[in-house]
Length: 445
Image 1 (tube, rainbow, N blue to C red):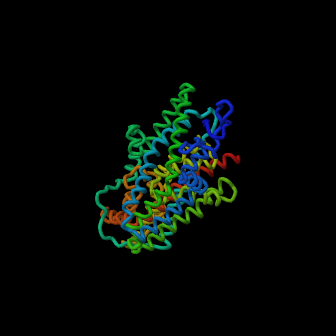
Image 2 (image 1 turned 90 degrees about the vertical axis):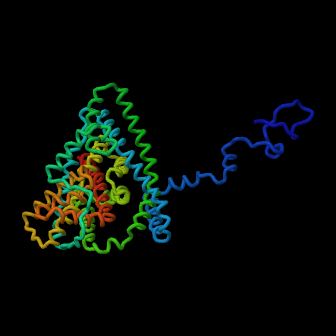
Image 3 (image 1 turned 180 degrees about the vertical axis):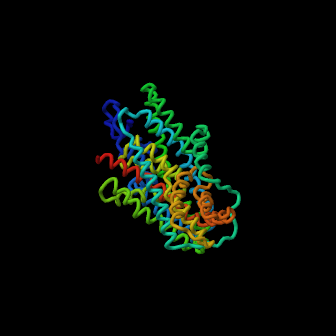
């Protein structure tokens, strides 16, 4: 932009002269340069965005956690409004997770190069070993520190499965579920089945079709990253609502039961899982263990949903440099069958019911309970209510009536604020932990 001003030689020709700030006419507009835009907008969000990008997501989540607790303690009446942030965050994760899993799995299989191993079988073995080991830890801990319950009233409105056969039947039906219905309801077993089938079919299609699926996978991944960046606000709302609604008084009467449950989960997370990982990578497992607990477990603790945490785990697996062909399948599958926390919950509450009724548990029954708890835990995602509604199935091993077992389920819902959060954190963080261990073992070999 050029201006004519008094600085021009009056005797010379009327040549345009570049603008000089010292002689700009009154009322003229400044040139549209980036620096002038910054001057015009002193309240720009750029410094704030830069600060957020420099701050780790875990630190932001920790700040949201502390802020939520303080709000619940100081202004509990305001938690209803901020609770919407938590609901919105979980809803966004649950909405994007089924689409993400379907697209990623189909894309990974469609673009899979012949002869390139996916290494899924060792991960499945780790899932099963970890779940069985968790059940054994729970049975041993319940035997050493037996808990008793105050049975008051049964949980209503829920129907537990009649046996293991019914659990397996539900899983089989989920495999052949309508693909649209599977996406709408978040049925990850059905989503995986259809994604694998579609991916295999597209492998025989044109290169253009496979490229389209790869681009879709990239696009959905970017959307997930945006959603995950909102985790601090979501955790802030979830923590504020949880502490304001329940506090600690509701949990005080079940202190010993919670101590056994949380103690078992911590022992599995910090002792059993590291031993399993060490057997694969043959080096110090704790840096990887703590990374998974910090990056995945914290988010899962507050979302209380393995399905909602699938996008978080997929992004963590990408940052760890794992093979996409492997983690795009193993992590959604782990959200369905890798249920160490559920095995602990089923075993501890079933044995607590037995101790309350004075039932003696022999060694053979305890071993059988470990197996039943592990199998039931693998099917927990296929049952409405998850691990709690599989407790009556485990109680049936001791001849405990269904009405008494449902009272145990009711207690499970009371302590679920802590139990379900810790269970989900263990389950979800173990998905990415075992996937990383198997991938590292393969790379080392």
